[in-house]
Length: 264
Ligand code: PLP
Image (cartoon, rainbow, N blue to C red; front, top):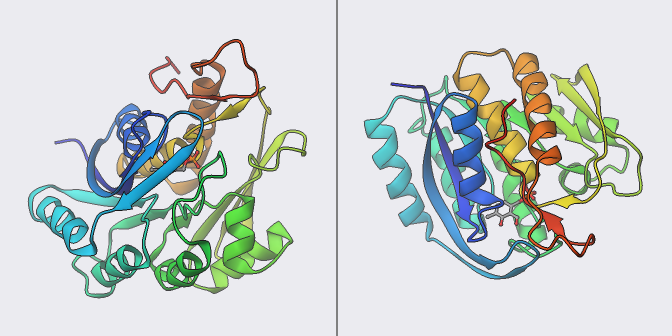
């Protein structure tokens, strides 16, 4: 069968972010997505109203059912929702219930693009630090990078996350809305190995971070090296954003939904 990426992610009923973004992105990358659902959010394309997290036991049961059945070669996590869920995933790595050679893409989701809460930030940050040493790649936006590293400078922050145990860090400036073009830096073991500049398109996008991280996960599952996977994901995400759907076309202050089925 196609290589399998097991995602730990939340349900966004609007279909823009979360597990639906993961499934579509991983499918477009050529791999098969399996999902352990971590939370059910109540949100539309514009804002998060509330969420209920699944218990760690329920998430673990979903994950182990898949791990026992399918040839999982990459793990991807997005919204985990509670420190219990983060600690449970950390334990699955520590106890090698997730085999040691499994790549792990950690998207350290703290808040939604709209600013809506997806968990208590301070407690999530503390728990993420213990998960970090298992990450092949962590994909923070600038807010998440600063919160996790305690550094304002993006480069020092990325190096710090490598020192804390992440093998690689992809820094994305897409959420810094007052900056010009979007810059991305890929650090591996504390060294910057790749920099890309992407055009800043008009509008804000709901689920772009989930989509990018999941496409990278899918390409890694398909056998790409990390740099290759990041370059392929940059090309793909740009097309999905150019072709994004506008739920409210008369209001340009609203968030758009990436079209992940665009030809690329
Ligand atoms: N996961 C879930 C379930 C979400 O609802 C969101 C945002 O709403 C995210 C992750 C993060 O989304 P983004 O890719 O926009 O950062």
